[in-house]
Image (cartoon, rainbow, N blue to C red):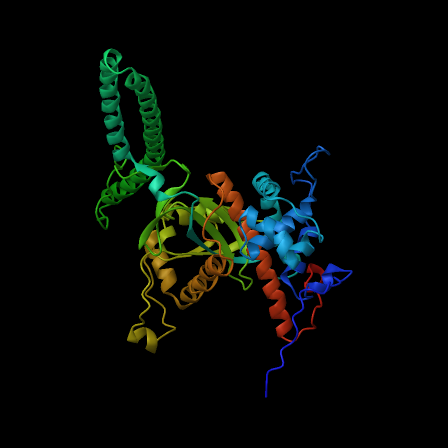
Length: 471
């Protein structure tokens, strides 16, 4: 029996539906995004107000376009522009036959960082009103490396910059000697030499600026490390006066000069070379931070970007990024890279932070006595011992176990499902803006997933997943 294929007719004119929504499935992410944006204040968004020249696109449409594009893996302004012609869902967002060009899209994204931050908070407020996000609870904090829009090969180390400056100075001196000789012998060579000298002088100035910036960064970091060193040393000295023996070696004072390997990138000076892929390789990157709800929603409730390669100083500012009007934190979870006595003391919530590498192997005693409490600590126990004891209790283990179930899957969704692995913008301020847009898109994706989960539990099917319908 031969196959009976349907006829594919590309020649007969086709009548499009009178309403473009007829081509958009009722149960689609775009309805949640458009409905959410309609509930956001648009007064803070910058648009073309001249009334002449460039077209004036409504900020609600532009924001919906950006959020949907980021949520579905389109990040380039040119790719987004192309989608306004080829993607039915994007055409629905833009009203059918409206096509903002890539420059308009890029400008809107670049100039509305503060409005994106407000939208991020407002969407979390909507989630609170819908009962999806609890007013009080915990947050799991972590960071992930996102590649910068710059090659690590465009960077220079502090030591190499110094060597190159010396080489360029020698070449300039040699060219000046050659210039004098050419004045008497080769007229054409004499004309070219000043251009070569100017090119080397310009390169030398850039390298000197790079070394100066590295030195400024070092001085700023040294002040922080010196204060930490003095505090740790004073604590050990106080213990010795009380007749106690401090554990471990004495802290080492900070270095007196920049590390020879300290880097400066000419393409994106704010980015840094960081360990990535579990320390298996290095990338020119930023450290994107997120605080994720541990009470079931898996929404990102706080976010920021830093250019520090490790997380040792990031716990307090990342926790502070959580708006208290959205979440009153009672627990904070983080891995060992975030731990410091000072950070734990500065956070009012109870912290559950690993103070060493967590073993996945369970001892026989732990298997036979899973509810056993650890030995009681002495009254004068050190903060690190208190934290270790807290995570050794059955309740502490259960709470800390939520970390891998919350923040790590969120980063996986952003990098794998959404495909966001590289910033398009440059500079710390601009990449912070872009990370806000990424996390906003993730949160609306998550709200859509929560709606679908609600329907699969047997609740009445919602025809279109609007915010009003999710309540």
